[in-house]
Length: 452
Image 1 (cartoon, helix red, strand yellow):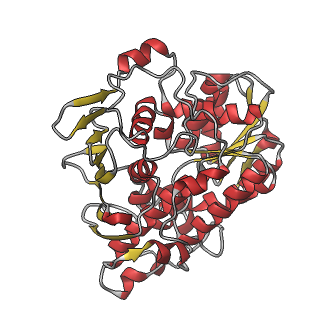
Image 2 (tube, helix red, strand yellow):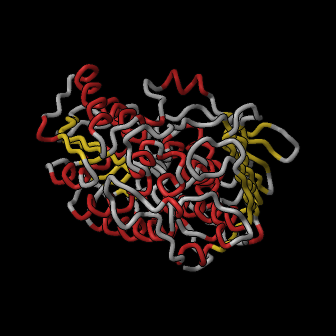
């Protein structure tokens, strides 16, 4: 793959609508300096039409694969985003998770999924997709995303893919190939990078593409927070079941938190620049985690073309300084997501997002709902839409940084995109696993170079 790969090449697969501007956006305090050269010309990148609710149209049947917390949240977001949606199928590896969502749908939305459309097991995803759904939400642990996306696309079903959408090199290549197939079939594919449907981010993105901060020269992205949840193994559980129920702490299932969570922030910088990193050097450590085999923290130096550097930092440790934000520096100014502002090199305010104006102009301000509005609008208009390509690139950037931290070595984009790395076990069944494969990586040792 060429090191000069740019997102505009990939976006040719996307439906290029809405590029003229953000309909109904909140008021800008400034339109930027005249004479600024745009980073990208309008029409070469996608801007969503962030309306409050999806257009009316044909009734749609939806399925959910992965009925845990994120799956429950996503299907509620979809039901808030559009009328005429019926949940007709549910699937999960374990019956208790499915039962919880089924009860929630009945009690809160009066949607009753019949017994013969509730599927349990590792093949539940196929049964949901084959049940006659038009659209499917995929919120299982991310390692399963590539194979499920491939099957849904083969069957002509529109997909919502929760991020990250790949945790290894093989999964990335599968995602990229399937995304092209989905576009060829006219399918709408949206991913869970909700900042792409968040009005303050979208406005900043448009201004940066218009050249308000000049050429991008670097940036910093952060996801530092307290420790996430963990789950101790219960008596009678197999290795496989115990790991899946504690999936967020196992690197083969989640990709480690630099991929599973911090992908949001990495993705924002890639979105703003239209590029991917060409190499990465980083480090990380495990100090407080109670289960699994992941790290607690990462610090990565991503290098882009023209020697542009991005510092990526993420941590999940209690009692530390927290920060979830992005900062982009340009030759004429900078953007800071913490306070939703763009300033020139002297610190003068060029733009600030007006949240109160957004609330006055819109009834829906939740980006988790707005991404589903966009998804349904493309489906009902019969327009192909591809977010999988961009999110696949961002997911692989997370993998690249992770592998540099695990090994202590510099990792290039060409190496990681072609690597023989496959986290998916050969057998997907409840039972014993070779737990010697799932150990904490130690940089500078052969152990740090393990693919599992």
